[in-house]
Length: 336
Image (cartoon, rainbow, N blue to C red):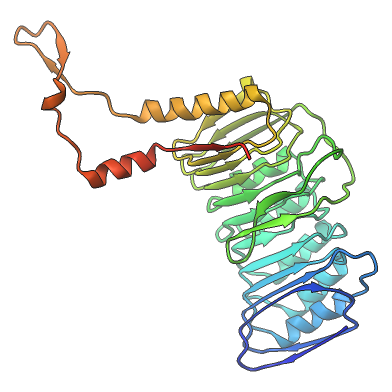
């Protein structure tokens, strides 16, 4: 196929189901966002190196870039570095199993202030995660590393410790004990904030099933660990966390689960065993019960006892406040 676009006014371009582009010319100097999704056909012969090189040179004002292709490689990322897109804020290069830490080093050299980085489906390791943390500690708020089998709990914990602005992190099927019978799952990362589905990909290794993951973070709001069947113990101290995805965390021990996340609104536990689901519900309910205010008490005249004020004597909160309190204390455990 052939793609030829020339426009001085086009600012956003989204194309999907692309395959075997023999030549691509996208000359749009004012384009700020581009999303190119290629089909997962084995006969796709698109030259992504040339495409990426051309994108960087003819679209110098790009802020958001999303490329989904199994043909992504280190060489394609190197070509992007040559264009010096210093203004990129969101970079999503997914399904590129040939992408390694060398590509991460290139991204770090070419991008000055990334806010979102999605390398799901790549082969980067903990070393690559370390480079990301060192380069973007003051800007990165969304990091997506789903289906990255060479990243371990050490890399994930390092990222949460070194990225204070992090609000969203996806590690779905990254800590995976076995690839048999694994299904695709949702992960956060669409440029517009929606949910994208990532297919099953071959990985280079499986991890042991007795891993412990400890995350303490003051700003993290969404954490996705779907399909992380290698996790045996999970300890979260995240006061701002409101969405937790534990779908198919089949080896997580309910006795080694600790959720210190008072603002949780949604916990996804599809595919988890009943004892784990029960432990999740108990911790969520206990957390909210502990946050409820106690009834006021009054000392008797002789100072010897305290009694609760009668129900009618308590000041009724306004309807608006009731609604706020109800929403604050409401959490849903999703099982489908």
